[in-house]
Image 1 (spheres, rainbow over the protein chains, first blue to last red):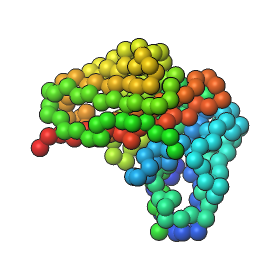
Image 2: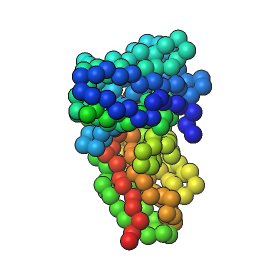
Image 3: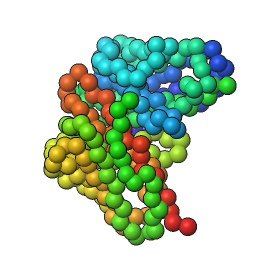
Image 4: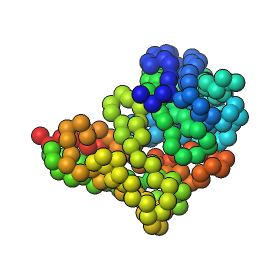
Length: 112
Length: 114
């Protein structure tokens, strides 16, 4: 158990819908990262937050957004969902803005 | 997006065999991390490397940070059935700076020889 929690574990929704994925980092970790894992693209970095502020952006679509709250949990919002958004979404956390990252169990999103 | 070249893509192991895999990059990294992922689970951190030339062990696993800072190697000695899974390398270009995101290899899938 990495200490990072993610909910929900599974999510099935229809195209055009909006969903919110939630992540709680390990106790004491200030950085939260979101990654997308699909079969053909592997693990891709989406966005990073550090102590409530956005720090880095990767290949995140404009339809996706995230935030980190004062209690350090983070939410990833995915809107206008398309079939191609079906993937595993992982949250990871670290103490600072670099070094070891610990991953949560992921949310499997299926868009039908 | 940018990715590392990880090889081999897959390999079959027989219990007791040693296993080697590696990652190469066109970029210099300040940190190399190795993860193992089981089906439907999140990646689990195995080894972290922070210095060029560093050799670090975790039980039967040994990883090295290449001298050029563009490659890393992972060796598993005396493999056992529970070593089956997908192993990922990940590189980080900066440490302690504004960006801490990881760039992942595509993985090496370890399976048991039939």
